[in-house]
Length: 325
DNA sequence: AAGGGCCTCAACCGCGAGGTT
DNA sequence: TAACCTCGCGGTTGAGGCCCT
Image (cartoon, rainbow, N blue to C red; front, side):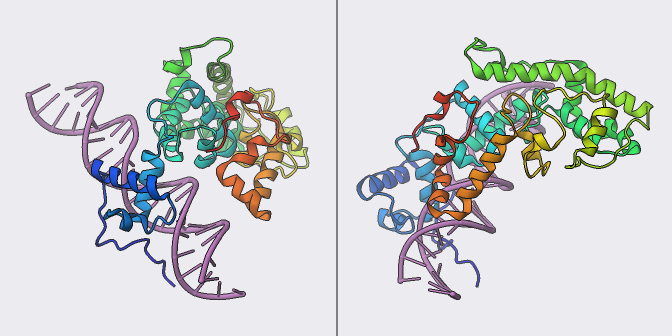
């Protein structure tokens, strides 16, 4: 059975909406609500697909939408939530009244991702690039380690240039409002300090790795039994891990210890509140995603995760108290 | 002033989940 | 229970504006 198209493509207009179309849609929805998007364009006299109408309404015409620049606090919320839930834009947007998932996604892709990358933080894992390289190095056999610098220069060329030349990138929100109460600035500055601290470490580590091929005896990823992690701490002092909350070992990776980027990202940087939190959140996501229909529904608008008392959270509570739309 | 490259963001696409018949 | 329908999500695209040379 093939998928039925959401509308007849032939009789449907596409592309930019005109003010007339906006008016028709807005006034129809004001009178009749948003039940049955398939019928709305027909009844409103629009030659548009129902899906297109829904998108136009939810992303642009809805009266409660905020248009304009993202505030510092909003950016901070996005970065922190992204470090936990990843590209779950609807969940993130649910914490930002007046912002849509499309807004958040666009802002992330066009601004925040670049800001983090430019600061030496991997926007996927929210770890400093240098830290990621150190992790990679601990999992490689000596000949591979020897190629790490080359690979790093290939993969993170621009980033490495920034790191190795200590060229700072002047981001507006990095310096503005850098007051004690401003947690965005604090978050950014802490990442900057981590970066500075690890620049030297990564340089030393890479050069040692290439000079001392026997330095790393293990070529395995982390070992849940803990035996390998002992090797890491014993033999990989060339890559001192910069963040206090991060360790290679079962206690940090949580019960499953899957070592996935997601798991690891929870345990690094200033957003880390411990593996227990990670486990709880993942459990929560699991519960709400599947087993319980009501919970699953709440997950979609992001309410339960952040209202749950069982989850510790290092965001200022004010940032998470926004009511769901 | 021109034009080429970059950036932004509105809009589209395909898919999965959940609801309805 | 299966088939169908609707909605919402995340990834991607492309038009238009901006910036730089």
